Image (cartoon, rainbow, N blue to C red; front, side, top):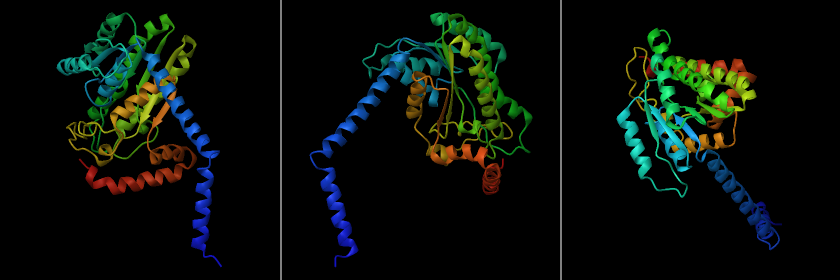
Amino acid sequence: MASAASRRSLLRARVMDFVTSTAILPLLLGCVGVCSLFKLLQWLRTRACVRNAVVVITGATSGLGRECARVFHAAGAKLVLCGRNAEALEELTRELAASRATKVQTHKPYTVTFDLTDPGAIVGAAAEILQCFGYVDVLINNAGISYRGTIVDTNLDVDRRVMETNYFGPVALTKALLPSMIRRRQGHVVAISSIQGKISVPFRSAYAASKHATQAFFDCLRAEVERHDIEVTVVSPGYIQTSLSLNAVTADGSKYGVMDETTAQGRSPSQVARDVLAAVGKKKKDVVLADVAPSLAVYLRTLAPRLFFSLMASRARKEWKPKRC
């Protein structure tokens, strides 16, 4: 009597014979080819959607903003790059102008230097942005700052600083540019939020609060401007391999200066930038770009809140010492 191992080997051999038969193998290869072609056509269509479109990117000098500048430039968009550092913006402009990695006609970017945390500068910056091409097709609110600290030790000025950068600044710029979009009945507003705009993680209170506010504001905006044919997309990434944690502020306002392991192991900013481009091209409303665990946590927060709260409390106990500052 044949052993179990022999029967398994015989079964595997028969399966392979079936798969590699002249009837099945061409069908499988055909399916793979069709799927690959479909993905290629989708990507080309996405790039075509932003070709010659005026795209404004805040926080363009580093991290995800810089990668978005590269990706949208390669797709043929007319860029207006925004940030606080004029020299860094000019450096990025020279880099993009020198790039020849695409067959699509590209355009020399404009730059506008201003600080999102300065309410008085935003109206003037919006006017300068509109002077570049006369209108804006896509506004990508990307600029942001992170935070590490305990709530009890954090100065209220730090909470305000994070909110000014992550919430009030993008809201003010969006409001300043929105009337021109409404007049044209055309425009797309993108808010780069975070998975922490959907769930709250211990020792990230100011950051999570600013991103929750961002999610809520742009969800409301989407509903209100739908009648004007304006699109609104909220993108919620998980951890990205950028300097966000290095530049995070702490409870006393000083720089955190540490590359978190989760950040170092996060997604590449170039991949996230391509996902942002795809979201714009497909006019997606809400996009979560996170791994399985944080994505499941979003549903767990709604479906099993007690379990979620217990898990967050456990995480807070484990991280208490390294996060004290």
